Image 1 (cartoon, rainbow, N blue to C red):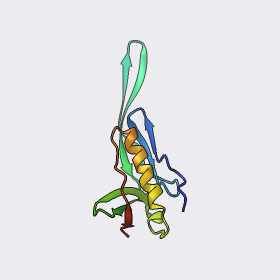
Image 2: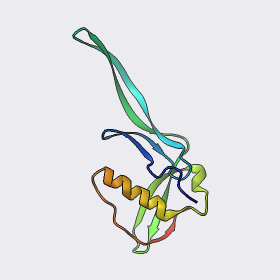
Image 3: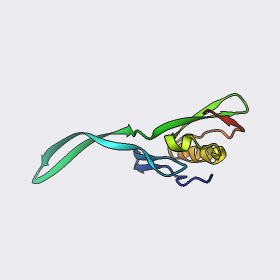
Length: 116
């Protein structure tokens, strides 16, 4: 099954704004306002918002198991988690690309299976 959202993280600079299911493209994590205040700076008014990431009810995770015995957990929606023919190589590749954007790299590994 091909991925609809290979680049599954929306960022504003270094801040993550939204996370999508890589398989179907649905939003699974969104930023929500947790505090808002108005400030005046000189003659201008500003609205300052503090936000936090919140997993939505559709959020779930799968664990990809590798031939060397290691494992990798990755976000996915609850509906897509039930899909038997997930392309685990593409899902892990998407995570590898996102890790590079965050300044680290995931190693190449041979995929064995996934958790249910």
